[in-house]
Length: 223
Image (cartoon, rainbow, N blue to C red; front, side, top):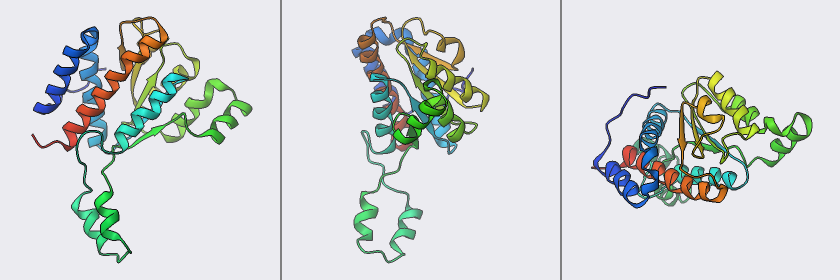
């Protein structure tokens, strides 16, 4: 899938260049990272949201990604003036304290966190459907699914990618050097150059930290 190249703020480019210098192993993934950045910015600017899924350590990564998108990562994100003015006019106790501590969010949902729903799907349908069901329920055209699988072959992640594609969502995969099944299914697959599970995860982390930082800079930065 060709994602339209968006302009990149100077500070976002600096973040990218610094990461590529620090993690030289990731340079073969540079174009995919830029494509993922462009897709994420387009999604958020157009009012979309990001769904994130993975298993085991990748489930922890999914939670981590959502945490970085939903509140300040590196730079301040004060609420917009229109909301602040409305909130302040409503006469709530401690309105100033609440409004001053709210931060603009980049809407993201972790699909690994909903224990009642997950166990219901596992019990009633099957573990391979835990993420697909949520993608079908939450996903809309123009949203993004970020799918993490160190093998690229995790059944429940692959099923979620297929459902996302049918909903006209953009799919961004994080996998190993081969990409597994996800490489042919995802619009963008970031195939980090390793085959050992924990080392793949160690390379996924700087990639998604970079994406969170660059997207935040692009949307909220001042340069």
